Length: 266
Image (cartoon, rainbow, N blue to C red):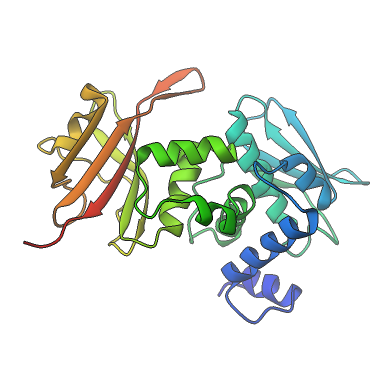
């Protein structure tokens, strides 16, 4: 455990895992504020003494102390769903030592994709999911064997990004599943930008999709559904994938959402 994580746990008198502490703090905040879904993120921030503002800036979120109050500034050009996640991410920074008692400037150039190598940002991403997609409520309406349509429906219901909802589905699944966010290149090939697995081997970010599997045709066909290989994980799987392009800085990004489930060994 890093020094920062130890200080975080000590600050709250917690003897367990820091991830469990962040989940607990977020649940307590939602309970104290009696928040329903979709969560009012501005009201959520106000419970932590923070005001939310928007500005043209090259980073997703900025948490500052102006001498009298905390201010969360989010990127005005980001999508509404991404701004909501950013607010929740910055709110989670206020649980860490130094932000409530002695606030300081905090700049996050990106959110929604930190990993364990950046423990503070990873914890705040984890907490943002807990706030925006409350565990108990989300689990209560997540189908046991969810599909692509369920991911899109949940994203809309919670006013969250498709990617945040998809990763949350994987995290709370009780069945083996892999959720992949793929992205197309200029040559129309695909690679893994993000992946989340439950009860399956991990899939590395950056892994290319082989050109000889049906999954590689999703950009041409718009959607594929088949039983077979993916080239990304050993064995055969039930595969659902759909092209869901979006705009990033005025440029079209070829994004694909894919769900993999293992098939029984014959």
